[in-house]
Length: 230
Image (cartoon, rainbow, N blue to C red):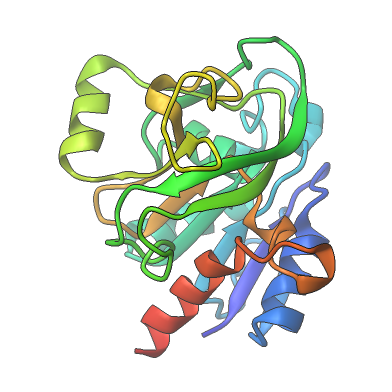
Protein backbone atom coordinates (compact mmCIF):
# COMPACT_ATOMS: atom_id res chain seq x y z
CA UNK A 1 0.00 0.00 0.00
CA UNK A 2 1.44 3.34 -1.06
CA UNK A 3 -0.34 6.70 -0.91
CA UNK A 4 0.23 9.49 -3.40
CA UNK A 5 -1.02 13.00 -2.60
CA UNK A 6 -1.34 15.11 -5.76
CA UNK A 7 -0.14 18.71 -5.43
CA UNK A 8 -1.64 21.35 -7.73
CA UNK A 9 -0.68 25.05 -7.79
CA UNK A 10 -2.91 26.38 -5.04
CA UNK A 11 -3.22 23.15 -3.02
CA UNK A 12 -2.97 24.02 0.67
CA UNK A 13 -4.05 20.84 2.46
CA UNK A 14 -1.44 18.53 0.93
CA UNK A 15 0.86 18.79 3.95
CA UNK A 16 -2.03 18.07 6.34
CA UNK A 17 -2.94 14.96 4.35
CA UNK A 18 0.64 13.73 4.11
CA UNK A 19 1.15 14.30 7.84
CA UNK A 20 -1.89 12.23 8.81
CA UNK A 21 -1.12 9.38 6.42
CA UNK A 22 2.59 9.22 7.21
CA UNK A 23 2.82 10.22 10.88
CA UNK A 24 -0.55 9.22 12.32
CA UNK A 25 -1.47 6.23 10.16
CA UNK A 26 2.17 5.14 9.54
CA UNK A 27 1.71 4.61 5.79
CA UNK A 28 4.20 5.07 2.97
CA UNK A 29 3.21 8.41 1.45
CA UNK A 30 4.66 10.64 -1.25
CA UNK A 31 3.70 13.84 -3.04
CA UNK A 32 2.89 13.78 -6.75
CA UNK A 33 3.40 17.02 -8.70
CA UNK A 34 0.56 17.90 -11.04
CA UNK A 35 2.83 18.29 -14.08
CA UNK A 36 4.14 14.74 -13.76
CA UNK A 37 2.36 11.75 -15.26
CA UNK A 38 3.98 8.90 -13.31
CA UNK A 39 2.02 7.78 -10.23
CA UNK A 40 5.25 6.16 -8.95
CA UNK A 41 3.64 2.90 -7.95
CA UNK A 42 1.05 4.49 -5.68
CA UNK A 43 -1.95 2.29 -5.02
CA UNK A 44 -3.99 4.98 -3.27
CA UNK A 45 -4.31 8.44 -4.83
CA UNK A 46 -5.51 11.47 -2.85
CA UNK A 47 -6.56 14.84 -4.29
CA UNK A 48 -6.27 17.28 -1.36
CA UNK A 49 -8.10 20.49 -0.56
CA UNK A 50 -7.05 23.98 -1.55
CA UNK A 51 -7.62 26.43 -4.36
CA UNK A 52 -6.14 24.78 -7.44
CA UNK A 53 -5.33 27.41 -10.06
CA UNK A 54 -6.95 30.02 -7.84
CA UNK A 55 -10.41 28.50 -8.39
CA UNK A 56 -10.66 30.42 -11.66
CA UNK A 57 -13.56 29.55 -13.99
CA UNK A 58 -14.97 27.02 -11.50
CA UNK A 59 -13.30 25.24 -8.62
CA UNK A 60 -11.40 22.28 -10.07
CA UNK A 61 -12.20 23.16 -13.69
CA UNK A 62 -8.58 23.87 -14.67
CA UNK A 63 -6.92 21.29 -12.41
CA UNK A 64 -8.97 18.64 -14.17
CA UNK A 65 -6.68 19.21 -17.20
CA UNK A 66 -3.36 19.00 -15.33
CA UNK A 67 -1.02 16.41 -16.93
CA UNK A 68 -1.20 14.00 -13.99
CA UNK A 69 -4.98 13.75 -14.25
CA UNK A 70 -4.72 11.53 -17.32
CA UNK A 71 -2.90 8.96 -15.18
CA UNK A 72 -5.25 9.53 -12.24
CA UNK A 73 -8.31 8.96 -14.43
CA UNK A 74 -6.77 5.82 -15.90
CA UNK A 75 -5.96 4.60 -12.37
CA UNK A 76 -9.59 5.12 -11.32
CA UNK A 77 -11.03 3.53 -14.45
CA UNK A 78 -8.90 0.47 -13.74
CA UNK A 79 -10.45 0.17 -10.28
CA UNK A 80 -7.74 1.99 -8.31
CA UNK A 81 -8.50 3.83 -5.07
CA UNK A 82 -9.05 7.58 -5.52
CA UNK A 83 -10.16 10.00 -2.80
CA UNK A 84 -10.81 13.74 -3.20
CA UNK A 85 -11.35 16.11 -0.29
CA UNK A 86 -12.92 19.56 -0.76
CA UNK A 87 -11.14 20.94 -3.85
CA UNK A 88 -10.24 17.33 -4.64
CA UNK A 89 -13.95 16.48 -4.62
CA UNK A 90 -14.59 19.39 -6.99
CA UNK A 91 -11.85 18.14 -9.34
CA UNK A 92 -13.35 14.64 -9.37
CA UNK A 93 -16.77 16.01 -10.31
CA UNK A 94 -15.22 18.21 -13.02
CA UNK A 95 -13.42 15.13 -14.34
CA UNK A 96 -16.63 13.14 -14.55
CA UNK A 97 -15.26 10.55 -12.13
CA UNK A 98 -18.01 11.39 -9.66
CA UNK A 99 -21.59 12.41 -10.44
CA UNK A 100 -22.96 15.87 -9.71
CA UNK A 101 -21.36 19.27 -9.21
CA UNK A 102 -20.31 21.59 -6.40
CA UNK A 103 -21.99 25.01 -6.61
CA UNK A 104 -21.55 28.26 -4.68
CA UNK A 105 -22.75 28.09 -1.08
CA UNK A 106 -26.25 29.46 -0.59
CA UNK A 107 -24.79 32.34 1.41
CA UNK A 108 -22.35 33.16 -1.42
CA UNK A 109 -19.74 33.35 1.34
CA UNK A 110 -16.71 31.23 2.21
CA UNK A 111 -17.54 29.03 5.21
CA UNK A 112 -14.85 27.75 7.59
CA UNK A 113 -16.11 25.99 10.71
CA UNK A 114 -16.74 22.64 12.34
CA UNK A 115 -19.84 20.81 11.16
CA UNK A 116 -21.33 17.40 11.83
CA UNK A 117 -21.77 14.63 9.28
CA UNK A 118 -23.24 11.15 9.51
CA UNK A 119 -22.26 8.11 7.50
CA UNK A 120 -25.06 6.78 5.31
CA UNK A 121 -23.58 3.35 4.58
CA UNK A 122 -20.82 1.14 5.98
CA UNK A 123 -20.32 -0.32 2.51
CA UNK A 124 -17.38 1.76 1.31
CA UNK A 125 -13.63 1.91 1.70
CA UNK A 126 -13.87 5.13 3.70
CA UNK A 127 -16.88 4.44 5.95
CA UNK A 128 -16.56 0.82 7.06
CA UNK A 129 -15.05 1.76 10.44
CA UNK A 130 -17.32 4.74 11.13
CA UNK A 131 -19.61 3.95 14.09
CA UNK A 132 -23.25 3.62 13.05
CA UNK A 133 -25.37 6.72 13.76
CA UNK A 134 -22.38 8.64 15.15
CA UNK A 135 -22.27 12.32 14.28
CA UNK A 136 -18.68 13.07 13.29
CA UNK A 137 -17.36 16.57 13.96
CA UNK A 138 -15.34 17.50 10.88
CA UNK A 139 -14.29 20.99 9.69
CA UNK A 140 -15.31 22.50 6.37
CA UNK A 141 -13.58 25.32 4.49
CA UNK A 142 -15.13 26.14 1.14
CA UNK A 143 -16.97 28.68 -0.98
CA UNK A 144 -18.33 26.18 -3.50
CA UNK A 145 -19.52 23.19 -1.51
CA UNK A 146 -23.20 22.98 -2.37
CA UNK A 147 -23.66 19.52 -3.85
CA UNK A 148 -26.09 19.37 -6.76
CA UNK A 149 -27.25 16.67 -9.17
CA UNK A 150 -30.32 16.22 -11.33
CA UNK A 151 -33.34 14.25 -10.11
CA UNK A 152 -32.43 11.05 -11.94
CA UNK A 153 -28.85 11.13 -10.62
CA UNK A 154 -30.02 11.69 -7.04
CA UNK A 155 -32.46 8.79 -7.38
CA UNK A 156 -29.64 6.56 -8.58
CA UNK A 157 -27.27 7.70 -5.82
CA UNK A 158 -29.86 6.87 -3.17
CA UNK A 159 -30.78 3.51 -4.68
CA UNK A 160 -27.13 2.45 -4.98
CA UNK A 161 -26.20 3.82 -1.57
CA UNK A 162 -23.55 6.03 -3.16
CA UNK A 163 -24.24 8.88 -0.75
CA UNK A 164 -21.57 8.38 1.90
CA UNK A 165 -22.18 11.32 4.24
CA UNK A 166 -24.92 13.81 4.99
CA UNK A 167 -24.67 16.97 7.09
CA UNK A 168 -26.42 16.59 10.44
CA UNK A 169 -26.58 18.22 13.86
CA UNK A 170 -24.51 17.07 16.85
CA UNK A 171 -27.18 14.50 17.69
CA UNK A 172 -27.16 12.99 14.21
CA UNK A 173 -30.41 14.58 13.02
CA UNK A 174 -30.33 15.43 9.31
CA UNK A 175 -32.07 18.80 9.11
CA UNK A 176 -32.10 21.92 6.96
CA UNK A 177 -30.58 23.86 9.85
CA UNK A 178 -27.59 21.48 9.93
CA UNK A 179 -26.91 22.02 6.22
CA UNK A 180 -24.07 24.60 6.01
CA UNK A 181 -24.10 25.30 2.28
CA UNK A 182 -27.47 24.33 0.81
CA UNK A 183 -26.32 20.95 -0.51
CA UNK A 184 -29.10 18.90 -2.07
CA UNK A 185 -30.42 16.39 0.48
CA UNK A 186 -27.64 17.48 2.86
CA UNK A 187 -25.08 15.54 0.80
CA UNK A 188 -21.52 15.93 2.10
CA UNK A 189 -19.82 13.06 0.24
CA UNK A 190 -20.45 10.49 -2.49
CA UNK A 191 -18.75 7.63 -4.31
CA UNK A 192 -18.95 6.22 -7.83
CA UNK A 193 -20.89 3.10 -8.82
CA UNK A 194 -17.80 0.89 -8.64
CA UNK A 195 -17.12 2.21 -5.12
CA UNK A 196 -13.45 2.96 -5.73
CA UNK A 197 -13.69 6.76 -6.20
CA UNK A 198 -14.72 8.89 -3.22
CA UNK A 199 -15.28 12.59 -2.65
CA UNK A 200 -16.33 14.73 0.30
CA UNK A 201 -16.32 18.43 1.19
CA UNK A 202 -15.42 18.22 4.93
CA UNK A 203 -11.74 17.75 5.84
CA UNK A 204 -11.10 14.51 7.78
CA UNK A 205 -7.35 15.18 7.73
CA UNK A 206 -7.97 18.24 9.93
CA UNK A 207 -9.65 16.08 12.56
CA UNK A 208 -7.33 13.10 12.89
CA UNK A 209 -4.74 14.16 15.46
CA UNK A 210 -5.27 14.04 19.22
CA UNK A 211 -3.23 17.23 19.58
CA UNK A 212 -6.04 19.08 17.81
CA UNK A 213 -8.60 17.77 20.28
CA UNK A 214 -10.60 15.94 17.64
CA UNK A 215 -9.96 12.56 16.04
CA UNK A 216 -13.33 11.93 14.39
CA UNK A 217 -11.74 12.08 10.94
CA UNK A 218 -9.43 9.23 11.86
CA UNK A 219 -12.31 6.78 11.43
CA UNK A 220 -12.13 7.34 7.67
CA UNK A 221 -8.40 6.66 7.46
CA UNK A 222 -8.78 3.56 9.63
CA UNK A 223 -11.50 2.37 7.25
CA UNK A 224 -9.19 2.67 4.26
CA UNK A 225 -6.28 0.89 5.87
CA UNK A 226 -8.22 -1.82 7.74
CA UNK A 227 -10.12 -2.96 4.66
CA UNK A 228 -6.97 -3.14 2.57
CA UNK A 229 -5.05 -5.02 5.25
CA UNK A 230 -7.99 -7.37 5.80
